[in-house]
Image (cartoon, rainbow, N blue to C red; front, top):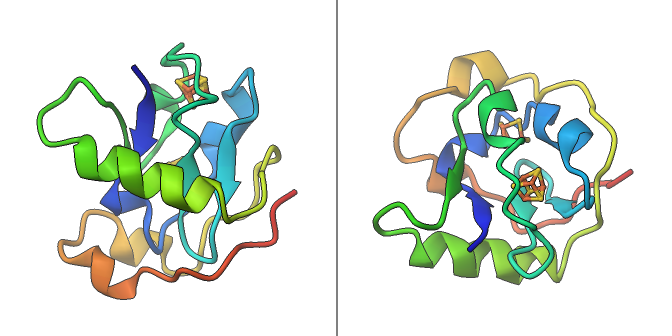
Length: 111
Ligand code: SF4
Ligand code: F3S
């Protein structure tokens, strides 16, 4: 089992989640984060920390595509362990549908 970051993180990226992860398994893209499914120890402490409700256990329905999405980009992006300012668009974009349209494959800065 693992937890994964889902679509509502895109263009919000609040980063509260990274501060509580005991194994530093969050990775940063330009406008979203992902969790490495092989590194996550399923502790669940990050889930309630996300203001955008964008973290889910993979035991929920239809999570397979998000596990693969998280795995793919965790292998490509730098690790992030420190909280940063949310994206400028965070408040406006929180809860919007169709956010994959805005997804960037570019890596974030990490840190
Ligand atoms: Fe880290 Fe625990 Fe969240 Fe997994 S469930 S990403 S180990 S805080
Ligand atoms: Fe994204 Fe929520 Fe973390 S918006 S960066 S999963 S706190």
